[in-house]
Image (cartoon, rainbow, N blue to C red; front, side):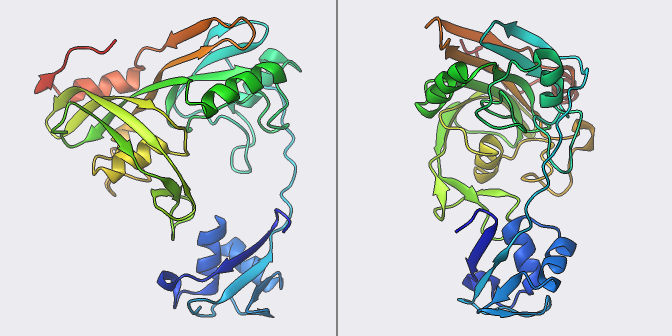
Amino acid sequence: MEENTFCLEVPAEAAGKRLDGFLAGEQGLTRSAAQKLIESGCVLVEGKPAAKSLKLQAGWRVEGELPQPEELAVEPEDIPLDIVYEDADLLVVNKPKGMVVHPAPGNPCGTLVNALLAHCGDSLSGINGVIRPGIVHRIDKDTSGLLIVAKNDFAHQGLAEQIQAHSFTREYEAVVYGSFREDSGTVDAPIGRHPVERKRMAVTEKASRRAVTHFWVLARYGGFTHLRLRLETGRTHQIRVHMAYLGHPVAGDPVYGPRKVIASLEGQCLHARKIGFIHPRTGKYLEFTSELPPYFQRFLRSLGQPAESLPPLG
């Protein structure tokens, strides 16, 4: 099947749902985009064109074709970068909160990739294509902190292999809701697409991949806990999903947290504090840390004195 085609079976929990709403959720479309697709005749239900208001039954087959995405023109932009380390093969960047990593239809410019193109020119790995040159791993728009970028395919391949082998160190700090009884622990729970809200991820056994997050308590506040977290795997939204799964969503998270979001945080209170890896060319282990950014420190101060602080981790 071509990448722009789809064939879906209506699950029991979606029975009675309108076709346009179901399609929007499954394909990550807006409701209006799903309606236009249906009206264009590109969607079939049980092999026949259907109305957007059709109420679906469990087991029905919904298939069709999505329009080919328009190729984005990625232009260099002179955007300041906080570069922690750089050599001929790679660089480590301290990404600010609010910056998107690579261009997308909703964010065609002002991204980290636009800034990297201006800084590095043609010297970026091409493994991930023109939209994500040099990007070995990503962090969310509203997550701050350290990100590694490959300048050539040799470095990219070597770093990607370390991530796949779980030998690439990625540590975060976060403030989450509630208080942990234990001082440390591990979440080993598979993550996949949410069965209904397709733009979200969830802990699920269906079409999921193993996800492991280790955590340590740094301080306990009234109603919040300051955590250090280490990723063993790197799934989309992994820390945010795992913390919500435990009943301790990340403070300020508009997707996995409470409906009443902490607006002053402008997104989740999550910082990529440390990365460590073996340099693909020299074989030397390198490790870099990033201090907590001002927004994170301000939020900690707003919580007052911690009820309990644990000895700092190494």
